[in-house]
Image (cartoon, rainbow, N blue to C red; front, top):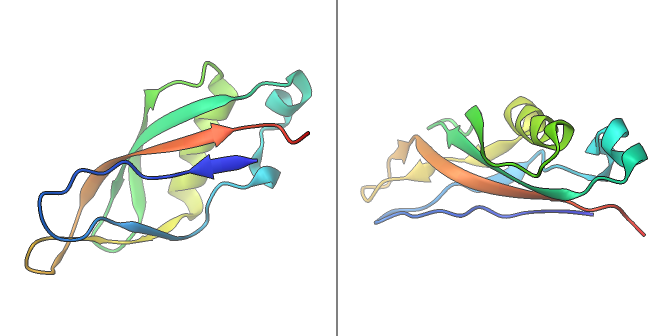
Length: 106
């Protein structure tokens, strides 16, 4: 139903990886579900050195306020990541773009 993947550019070291809390089918906003809205929300988040997602903004709107808002709210409230590592293996903050595809089940 939903697909997420991180688009990262890192010169050296390791990018962050999602550990848990991914957006799932039960997260579909009720109003968007009723109205049959789908779309791709691309959010920009900072993943901190301790693996939290903060500072969410919409990099590209799905065209639906409800879907975009849910993407940020869910990601900042419950997702956990491994932190990015610099070229010396130290955890660092990193801003990434995270696409969240909202697709209704058949």
